[in-house]
Length: 217
Image (cartoon, rainbow, N blue to C red; front, side, top):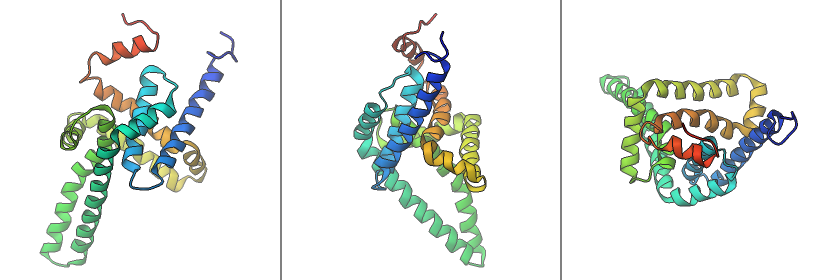
């Protein structure tokens, strides 16, 4: 295989970087109205998982298809999350303001509910991208999957946390995030989600290999 051929490592690397940049730009553009962030995040994971599974290059088409298909449910989920987060922050600040037992109880309650809320938030949009269910079913499944595959959940938290810390404290990393941040984060975490989802979709691996032109033994 020639180094600079279309199947060579150099071409494949630049194609990979291009795909990440495209995913990043699409996510930003489709998120601009703000209330569409949920739908664009669902589309981001749909496109990224599709790319990882079958080496598909139809990123624009896949993104637009998922955005349109999941717009209603993803938007409701996103707006609900924003409302819940606002209520959570208000309760936490009010609890910190109260210098008595009631304030301490509110802080403890907020701390307890933070874990399931955070885990559901991490999983909900990939789950929405993958499974066609009612909103309450996807929310329930997102929480159950996060608890059932807790080591994977910790890995996802580590990935997200690493990106946040590097962005805050390592200035050169900001340029990378500006160029392809959303695409890169989705790519890394999508590998974990694909691993989890395939446990519930046993025939998917064989189908993906057939679509990508490989053979399944």
